[in-house]
Length: 415
Image (cartoon, rainbow, N blue to C red; front, top):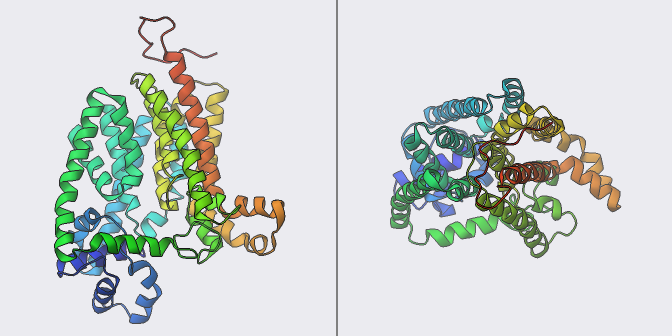
């Protein structure tokens, strides 16, 4: 529960009238409460001593913060587990045209996400609610529940849910209406949270910015460069593209703009395809699969966020059902991604790469370091390129052959 503790004690700060974004006040609450030995608390001070989440996140945790720690963290684990399993089931339902392929992929993704339960990161709940919202919108069932789920995701982790929200905004029609409703609900949820936090700490924005800068400083825990606290394990944790580019040149002025440029071009292509093609049920899974992988590349994300790749299951099942070489490639690439992004696999690669990381030199050593210590961004980039290409090809097939004709509502049959 290393990631749930800062949420729990941050919410405890709110309930006891303290400024949660103040490191001094947050750490004082952390050491003063609970029956955990002080020596054990000291081990996690680097996790718990910084508040970097949005105010809405702590507001949502306040009901649990009113409970003792032993009850609160078990409740959080059960809630995360149940919601995530529901989301996985719904993704299987969206990929029901190929149930065997969907079940196989969901199995691979689920066995690799034990960290969602172990550390209690909010990504587990946010990703699950985001997937539930996608199912509600695409199936046009329980749509108001989907709006609330997406609103919570936007308020808590906008860098995870924002691109998914953008797809429904671009799709138009009733989907744009749901996207706007979700945005308004997120604002309604976030405004009281901001007012409460501001009342207890008027300088909370400056303090939050200072916390973010401190955690992302050169050599700090969130630094994507090779000088992080533990560069081997850190490389397997951070999945943004900066963690790979920084190996070539460890300078934020180099790897940040280059990452933004690469991802910006891919995002622009995705947006243009979405605007030019009318919404179609057979295009939606491909669009969502591409943006789910792209979401994690431009800005800081951790390996827990890769659970969002469950959105690739319906797209892969759709391509597999066409029974051609593209479907076989989709299954191979998606299954390989699920295996390589497995939390245990990433940790084992980090352990076994110790001699490589210590003695590697030159271009060969750099390639080995990327392969063993930072495979996640490369895997995500391959997924983006593949599903974006499939999205473009499917949209092009459905484009009217002559001006004034309506596009087909289903993809053309393939040989």
